[in-house]
Amino acid sequence: MVRLLSANLSGYPTRPGLEAIEEYIRLGGENPFTTGVKNAVQDQMKAGVDIITDGQVRETTPLIASTVPGMVTDDRIHVENKLGTPRKPTAAEDFSIAVRQCRDVHRVKAILPGPISFAKSCQVNPKSTYSSSLDINLLFDIASILRYEINALKDRNARLIQIIERVDRINDTEVFLELLSVLFKRVKTPICHLVGDVNELFVTLLEGALTVISFDLVAFPQNCNITRFAEDFAAHEKKVSIGCVNASTARQEPISLIDKRVSAFVDAFGDEAIWISPSETLAGLPQSSAFRKLTQLEATKRRVASKLS
Image (cartoon, rainbow, N blue to C red; front, side):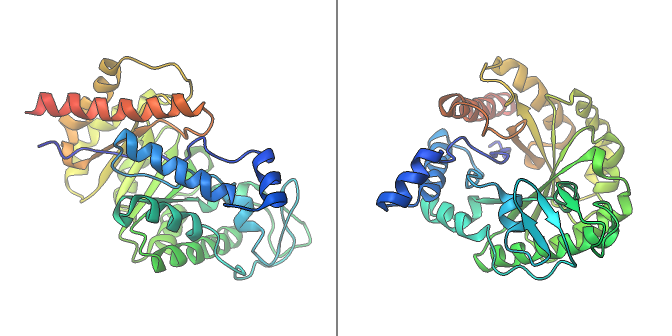
């Protein structure tokens, strides 16, 4: 029996439009963001995906920032003063809606921004206590804010918690590993999706506070070379999540091409250590196209299973 799992990477195109929000304000009824989460979960379950998300129907980073003393949000996030403890958590509500919809907390993956990406999205006031968006004190203060969100998710029994970072923004690997330790202490299954070429980081990340290292094989085909680290990988109890279905376009690739990407990792790391996912968020696609991308994950799983049997 194949042990490879399918997972939605992050978003899904069910975020409500302005018209739906205005109608809700005027007439009431179900919150359109709640409806968006429910629709995202229903599609993922219908497609047969093993690990689902809430669809990221809200802009997570500015939503978190709006609750943080010391941050001001308008068209951008401004850091004006020393950051304080958030006034309330923001991610747990949609997570809980997704859990109620699918009725299995073990299948729902929570998504948060990484601390470095969060910091880079901020404009830092020169009069604040931080020198720039790269200030190490700012990075760890943001990590503490994200940890507050993670604690709220853990209170809702979240086990799968993922952050997203860009490789080209990680200037100091040791600092990054320390940030991961702050974020993911006592998290059951910590996950980091890395956007970019992961080859130089991969072996180091095997030592980090992560269970799943996630990366894209479509926009960054050089990540296919990570299979050469099979011996290092075998020495650690880790998994990889490989972005093998092209989510940058509505066009569908042949299953044979997706299978080729996946099979190389199955051969190198073993099927029990592999998750397969879209290469990036599905939120930018038409909903029908996004659904077909998810069904391609399941078709690939069946194809791999038939070969292994």
